[in-house]
Amino acid sequence: PEALALVLESVCRQTRPPDEVLIADDGSRDDTRSLLHNSARDFPVPLRHVWQPDDGFRAARARNRAIATLALRASARSS
Image (tube, rainbow, N blue to C red; front, side):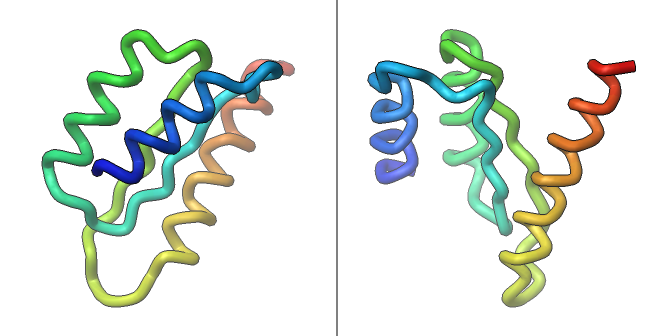
């Protein structure tokens, strides 16, 4: 989670922040989940964590789930 913490810190320092940040997680440990949960409280934009169990190499599936989550949220907001 140390590298992820640095990435999140970098996102916070951007002069133009993103609309939201999606973390596609392929089976990380509880310490990563805790980092994201705690970071989300004070994060300047919505921070979403999409987790799946580590059942072999399925990173692409995790990314696709995160993208689908974003698409559903965008669709709901525009309705």
